[in-house]
Length: 513
Image (cartoon, rainbow, N blue to C red; front, side, top):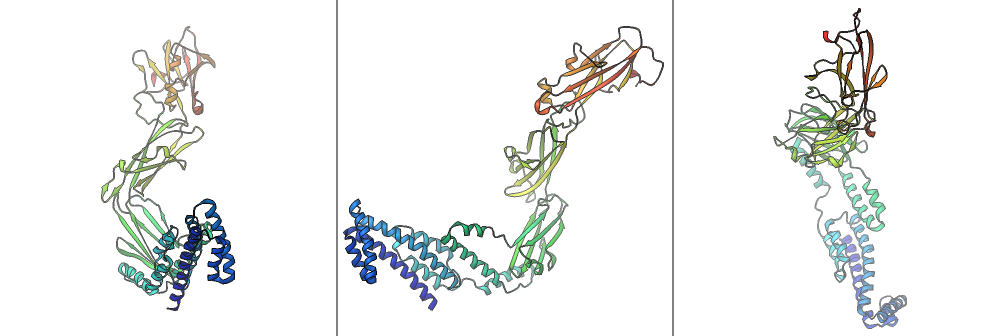
C-alpha cells in the first residue's frame, strides 16, 4: 500500500503541475499582466525564488501577448509546450517506478494511450497520469511466476504427459528487461532501440533440406544461444507419437512420406531458460525442370538441340505441389528464379513457370534454380545445369533429287567413284538467332585455298573431276558466329577426297559403306 501511495502521489503531482502551468500561462496571456502577475503567482507558490522565476515567465508571456495580439492563445500555447516536455520526462519516470518498484506493468497496453493523450491540447491537462497509476497499482497481477509455470506445465503435459521445471525466473527477468529497454528508448533515442533489435532469439531451428521431396531424409536441429540446451530435456513427436525424448537430444532425423503425404513434427523443450515448443509441417513436393536450347539442328532431327555458350534457352518448371491432399495448380504458385545464385526478379512471380534466358558465352554451363512458394510457405525447390556443348559441322552427301542424305554422315576420307560429288555442311548447336540473321557464313577451302560455288553460302559445295588422272584433294569448311556476344561459337570440318584408279584399300569407298 505504501508503494501504491508513493506512485499515486507522484502521478498526481505531475498532473497538477501540468494543469496549473497551462492555465496559469493562459491567464497571464489574457491579462497581459506581464512580470508583475508572474511574480505574484510565483511568490504564492515558492516565495522569493518563485517570484523571480514567475516574473521572467510572466514578462515573456506579456511581451508576446502584447506584440502579437494573441492574448490568452499565446499563453495557452506556451503552457501546452512546457506541459508536453514535462509529460515526456516525468511520464517515463513513472513507468520506471511501476516496473521496478511495483514489480511490473499491469496495463502495458494503456501506456501508449496515456503518452498520446498528453500530446493533445486541452485533453493533455486531464489527470491521465493519476488514472494510469491507479489502474496499474490497483489491479492484482494477471500471471505471476507460479501461474506462468502452471500454464507451461499444462501445455507440455497435454502433449507429452510430462512435468517441467518450476523455475522460469530468468524469463521474468528478460521480460522486465525488455520493458525497461522500451522506456530507455523514450528517454535516450534510437541507439538503444538498435541495440535491442540485435538480441537474437533464444532458440533457432535448422531444417535440412528446407523443402524436402517424397521419401527424403530430413534433419531438424535446435540451436540455442549459449549452452543451456545441453542440459535441457527435449521431446520430439511425429504425427502425434513421441519418437525421441531425452536430455540434450537437439537433433531429430526422419524420412518423409510419399508425394503429398503430410508429416507433422513437434519439439517441446524444457530448459533452465523456460519452456519452448515448435511445430513443423512437411508436404513432400517435386519440382522437375526441363530445358530446351534454341540452337541449330537438321530438319526432322530426332535428337536434342544442345546448349552452346551464348545461345538462348528456356527452362520450364513442372511442379507437383500438394495441399490438403489436392494438387495445387501452377497458376496458384509463385516461382522465384535464379541463375548462378543471382535472383531474376523480372521473370519471377505468380504463375511464371517458364524462364527464357540468353546464356553467358564465357561460362562453361548455365546453373538455373527455382524456389516455388505456395502463399508464404516454401513448397519446393528445383535446379538444373545446362552444360555448354561445342558447336559442330558434319558433312552429308547431297543427292540432286532427294536432297541431303542425313542417314549417314560422310567420313573423314572417301574415294570418288563417279565424276562429281555434292557435299552439304550441316551446323549443329549454333545459335538460331545467328542463323536467322545471316550471322553464320560458310567458308570453303580446297587444298587450303578458299573456294566457292553457286550454293556455297548455303553450306552446299559440288566438286567435279575434270580430267582422267588420279590424285587427292582436301576439302574444308568452317563456320564462325559473327554476333559479338556469341563469338565463341565456331566449328570446322574437313574431308579428304581421293579420285581416279585406286590400288590400295586404306581409304574407304564412300558408296560401299
